[in-house]
Image (cartoon, rainbow, N blue to C red; front, side):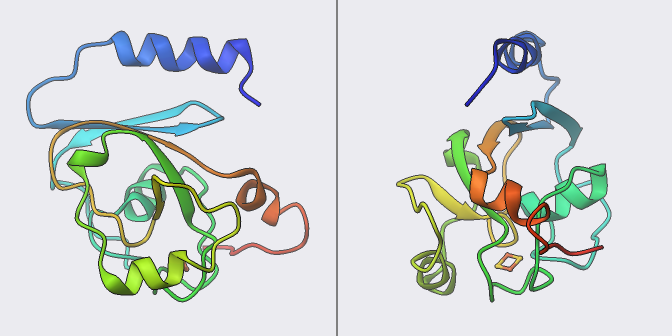
Length: 142
Ligand code: FES
């Protein structure tokens, strides 16, 4: 459940104007917000270049990725709350894998497969199952 402080953090971040060609990616419920120039982050060798997972690794935000970003697990599952139109189309491979995810929702994506293709603001929520994965003994150290 979202706390008032987390919601406030997001609202403040959303209100800050975004310069042209910049991307802002916000991870909920923690409210971590990262900004970068579209297409300018170095590739971190996990998931597709420019994917939500790639951005998370670049910016030091923990997003689980048990299979190393190879569309072979669902631990990078995120629910896109805003900016769906800025992301790459979902491939058949991603859709097939997502079908096995816990708590699948209409706007679910795999963080390692969903590439941020256009500048703007994207807000994703990390489902509680994935957030708890590390606490329950799973988790990657990458
Ligand atoms: Fe395994 Fe994305 S990290 S499917």
